[in-house]
Image 1 (cartoon, rainbow, N blue to C red):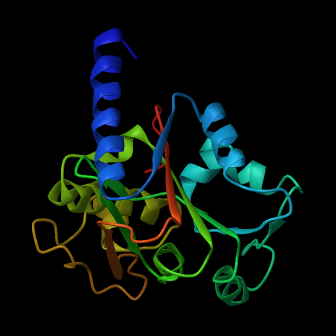
Image 2: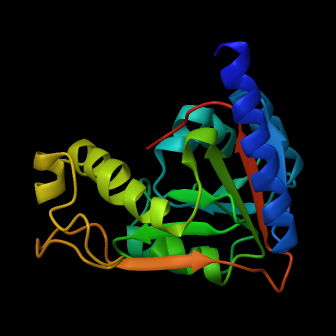
Length: 215
């Protein structure tokens, strides 16, 4: 990344962290994914029961490897019946996830299929750690909606071989419509829409990474 682009990116990250703080969502900055892993580790305790939502970001950043290190009791939905993992997650010490978008107004925007990821974000686990690359930062909620419809959902649909219209078109078939507009596919991924605009507790912590991660 050249110097000018780095300056613009750093300034945007700074604005976003300040806005999150105003909404009582503490956020820290990690210039690299390696530093992000260390920050995540500092937010957890050895022996914690931890869980996560489906996330390319956690895998690409190295956080998922940390989760599988043996230092924690990991509720791995790939190693146990998913529904069992979903229910046990609500009593976990830490839930790790990414966000579909984070606005410069300090809002977290997430869209989910089954709803287990956004449910745990909202309520249940004692602590939630959101890890997101700087590519997830958008100006406002409208850009967040467009980001999911035109980028995140199509990419995830292709990765998961969902067969949804967006996975074939490279965009949502209802682009330009209201936030919740979408396809009628039985495997539709965009079913639950959650905007976190303010936090009354101290559960959610954000780690913003100065690299592109995930979709």
